[in-house]
Image 1 (cartoon, rainbow, N blue to C red):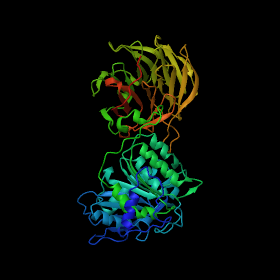
Image 2: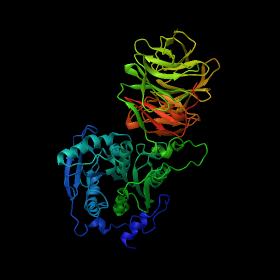
Image 3: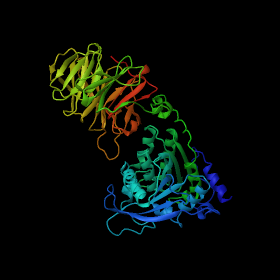
Image 4: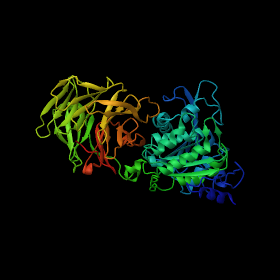
Amino acid sequence: MSPRSRFLAILALSLSTLVPVGLHGADDYTLSRESLERAAGVPAGKVQEFDFNDSKVFPGTTRGCWLYIPAQYDGSKPAALMVFQDGHEYRSDKGSQRVPVVFDNLIAQGEMPVTIALFINPGHRGTNAPPAAGWGNRSNRSFEYDSLGGDYARFLVDELIPHVKERFGVKITDDPEFRAIGGMSSGAICAFTVAWERPDQFRKVLSQIGSFVNIRGGHVYPALIRKTERKPLRVFLQDGVNDLNNLHGDWPLANREMSSALTFAGYDSKFVLGDGSHSGKHGGVILPDALRWLWRPAMRPPEPSTNNWNGDEALNKVLAGGGTDAPWEKVGDGYGFTDGACGDSKGDFYFSDLPKGILYRVAAGESRPVAWLEGGPKVSGLKFGPDGRLYAATQGEKQKIIAIDPATKAITDVGVDVKPNDLIVSKAGWVYYTDTAAGQVQAVPISAKAMPRPRVVAGGINRPNGIALSPKQDLLLVSEYGGTNVWSFVVDADGGLSAGERYMTLVVPPGRKDSGGDGSTVDALGRTYVTSHAGIQMFDWTGRLGGVIAKPEGKGIVSCAFAGPDQAYLYVCASDAVFRRKTLTRAAAIP
């Protein structure tokens, strides 16, 4: 079999084909001419070496880097970009990858765009830094590459790429569809983390022998992928059946799990499994065709897998097409700070511009907000009660629980000498509200007239914030802003709460200790939606996490509610704006 035929045979493996490639002995791979030499008439790009020692994200680090500029780049328009971790191995003309030669050939053949390549070595802290070439012991490699979270992405986006553009005078596209990132081993999970955290910057990932194991928590990615709204990424995975199996995990198994999760969630992904070990040999052999696959024209990603158990509550039961068919729609922006998301029984949506003391309404059949109450109190929480009045938690010098008559706009004080954050109103006639600083839930009857210091019905909660009732109103749910839980309490006949337990566990982004659990709402099937640092976290009626819905435009979100036609639109208050998106569910019955 010719080398070229071997490449095609390997790439012919479907996503579900996870058996060893039995074409030759383990790691007995040989680079083809396409990687070893430029085809006749193909011009060579330039590779320039430089150091970068001024990082504020990784202070005190030094690192070697190289910039490849293709011969076809003339500066008339921005070039595509591909970033490689462990850059010395990818840049080397004697290594396993030989990217400059491969790029020269593929760009000349029109099989990938005119692409600038940035080769980056991991940082080294302290003295005795190894030479730029070769696999030296660079002390900051594991910290930079294996850690989850957005630090390495910030290093690239805010520091190194701007430095390269200024130093070399190159134009690099801002279009994330023309930005790719890759690496091997820990450099591969680093590449995936960058795209995962910043799909607004990178949307193509090349992972070779990726370390999706528990070195610094990377083993969680398959679970996160399954329970996070699909991101606009294209991912190529490569591994070998003889890869590592040690205290951190099983590399081939971890990559199979990654492939399975990506397939389940409906990603444009491909997994090629060879019989190699923990080296770049197999990945280098298939690199030309892997790049062809990554840079092929845009296509609609596959649909997420259907659930195989009736009780499963994955995001595809809430978001059409896994979310890609119904993106966030901006309803309004330019506000001071939006909060108090609230829907009524007709599907009208209400929210507050808190610092300006204005309440807005979006009628069920409309898509733009109209000022509904101006010159009123500063409101952080809104809910309708069984008597038709709109109840609010106010901020300012004299915080209160108030009721607003929708017809006359008359305001009645219900509870005073309080410090409410958010509230919910039960059919039984109780206003439950969170006192975040005190760690408590308090309750006041809707019949009250300026009742001072209403009774405490629950305490010991880590900065309680959002609050909701189950569809049957037999359970009260309270999210922790400062912790990681959503509490569930039984609602007693006298309006009290009992049998409290930490019922749901909120996802916490890497690098944070708090979930930022904030405003909450419940749909007709008992699913709970909680705004948080990670996004809108959706739980089924048993308290199991079903998925995390992406934040609109990456904005912080503080409250959410179902409203609009058929009460099927999920609205969110996000900083200075309000967004909504169509769902496959609807609001629970509103009093």
